[in-house]
Length: 252
Image (cartoon, rainbow, N blue to C red):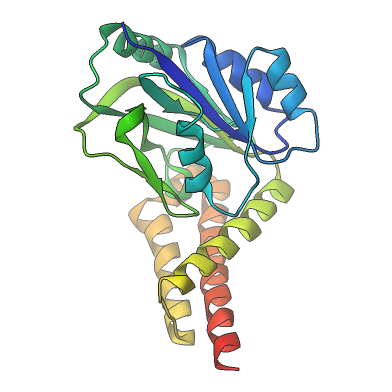
């Protein structure tokens, strides 16, 4: 039998931390919280419910936080879980079966279903997706500051069950993430040498809307799904406008 650590990144997650820690403990006693400077009761509540808490200052780099988490455990397996995510019962049993089997010869992907503003989404921007989250600890590295992803050379397999993702509590929460993610994306894209024109900004934004509304049939989720497609147009527009702003500053 192998061992498992569940790794959770946090900052001011007191509304979620108890539920996510208790959910993770159904899989393993080793629950590790990587906190980036919470000013609420996140750390206190996590410790009270049996999680180990480590601190790493936030540097606008999600991959760096996840890679730091790898250094805080010696478990054979690691499973990444965000504070607003929960493993359903079927997925919990699937994870436990992998750990009990003890073979460290692959990585695992799982389905994730989103709930936002009290609505379950099946299409468009928040349609169910598959995310690679469970890895042998020594076989994975994370890259990119925002919309980070894992790099692992092992075969990818699928685990039955799903993650329930309670992504946006309200529109203020959505706005905060919008500002954070678009700024980080623009800065990273600029450093990579990416450049954009004003016409390119509009075409990328229009293409993003078309992809979500038509290709992913976002309108099938009703007025909320349609509205989220328009929001995706604005998200794409904003991140490229921020990139364009950095370009203009360079010329000046």
